[in-house]
Image (cartoon, rainbow, N blue to C red; front, side, top):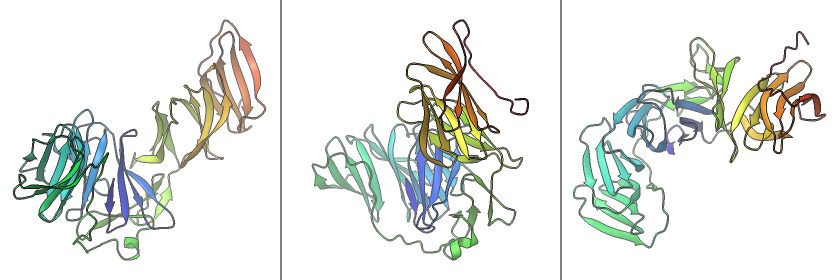
Length: 364
């Protein structure tokens, strides 16, 4: 997680969804947007574990412990993602930035601290003889870090990292670290009337900004106001659902990713647009649930006990829900109202195994 203290935006990485998101702070409506997702390639977000913002160049830097370990950068509106380095970045625990020096510092659980310039040059080990360094912060002429093996917070000199002094001992399970101070950067292109942006104002440089819209909305041609996405594709990926815009000019996320509940596995999906619900099968429970596209708490409609639900279809005209149900000794096609009430068996058999199902309301 990282805070852009100038624009009042919070950025965070989601390892489950493979995304980096932003949300506006201190406003009545907390607009939220996916700025970067896994679209394949070497700069894709895989397993983001730590990040920091740089007010000098308008970028966000993140450490990724995915299939290809790396430190990446992206302009804070999601544009121009780059791989800064793939060297000495295995098992990063924490990433921070020295703003005046324009240097990135990170800890590796293997026992080392490294640094390099924000552009990827001058890669240098700070210390390689530590126990298990975790949280790290840099302020003025000192590096502060926590070592979980020795349960201590230690301070190192930037100019001579062997010049060390222990600040606290017997500190347990410290994970993160930040210095609480007012940063020197004061120029804020989003400072007046939210940069004239209807929803999100994202700083892209010292004197530049970009208006953006929350996930599920698109930016209008005026570059300031937003409109809702009217059509999008919903896909289930076992542990979560996500939606992609079908607009010709952009295929960004059209809904906030929805995670499966604990010990759940999302299977078949259907929608009821008029009521703004997504219906889906949870294979592990097993059950049928529904949730709003903008998130919220899923509502359980049908519980299957030891059965297996394989197919799901919404009749958006009559307001009914159909599904296939494979029980231990018999197989069914069932129907209920959209809220799960009035559950009824339409068909059952022993020697058939219905799986996917579809309805055609126009033909009945």
